[in-house]
Image 1: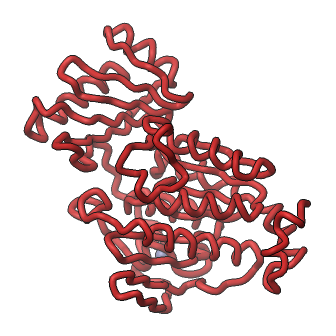
Image 2 (image 1 turned 90 degrees about the vertical axis):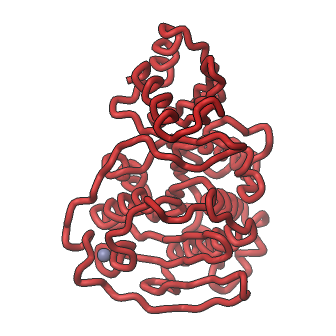
Length: 339
Ligand SMILES: [Zn+2]
């Protein structure tokens, strides 16, 4: 153990030598590598947390760079987990990093939690948060929840198999119509602050301290204020009642970028990257590999696509297609080549 490296945190009464050993032995899953997850991952790696499992399906894009400080211009187009793993190893070579290019849904959430001692929910959609929450109930994993939008953020800690959970607080919501960072915007310092508070809560959980357990911390950076609210298990919580999650697999519009629609589809039977490369070339599509987890290609009308090893097709649709229905047809045409 390199105590000199960590001496300024070992000096804290709450950490000390034994706490540093606990951090070194910890295995933490960071689910979502956007603004929150990249901050959490950088902070925990720098502190010497032994192993980080990084989970995300997405690729780095230019509008991420103002707040996701782990990424640089050279990572644009790469899988977020692959780019983040490379950066974390540069910053602390003794930390083990396992990148998982996975889209978190009901089927895959188990992969994100089963090997971890602690799970951090840094996701930005409710459907994925619900799926992760259910997996944490089933596998009895403590969950640090976070969210950040506009200038408002929230952090809480759940031990959802014994106490409250995300669906106790936010039951039966759908992502449709809810604002996102792409539509409503987000203050970069908010995600860094919320991510830092989540990382601090992760450290406290590893050390056996329950400071935000079943408590919601509300952060308002517009007003520079913090507030805490106690949470109880909701007797009508769909997760605790064991009700099924509503599951929909359709082309989803994520946002508009430079007047171009950005659409996403999780494929039903996703091919591996090498198979996808073959299938695309059989359809006369010339795709190039970005890193090891992403295929990038452009169609004749100028729509740009990324296919990630999570089985997700991301499409930036050409301006030629103005309606959402036309845009969806473009995605469906390419998905048929891959399925
Ligand atoms: Zn619940």
